[in-house]
Length: 87
Image 1 (tube, helix red, strand yellow):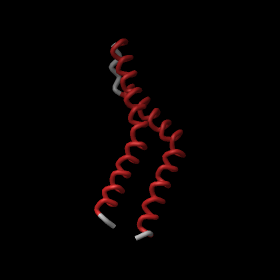
Image 2 (spheres, one colour):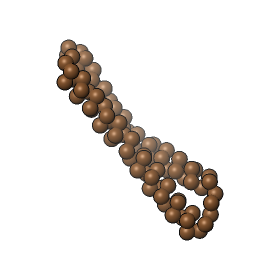
Image 3 (tube, one colour):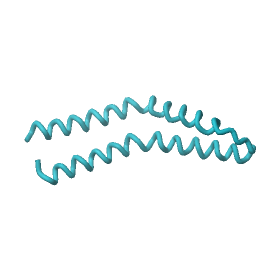
Image 4 (tube, one colour):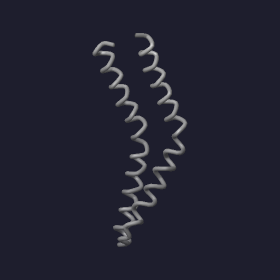
């Protein structure tokens, strides 16, 4: 394997991590900002009010997007395996 092929594999892995990780993080960010705004408007300072909805929203996002995430991971692994076998 050449240095260029290794760099390409690592670049693809980083892009895959971003494709898989960004949607749950954006949902967590949106829910966190929404709850922070609600807390600021109502002056409710309950600490569990921040974490529980955020965790539920992130898990729900992962649950709904998991088939697509699995397809991306399978395609990436097939690509890497083909490159290894083709050596």
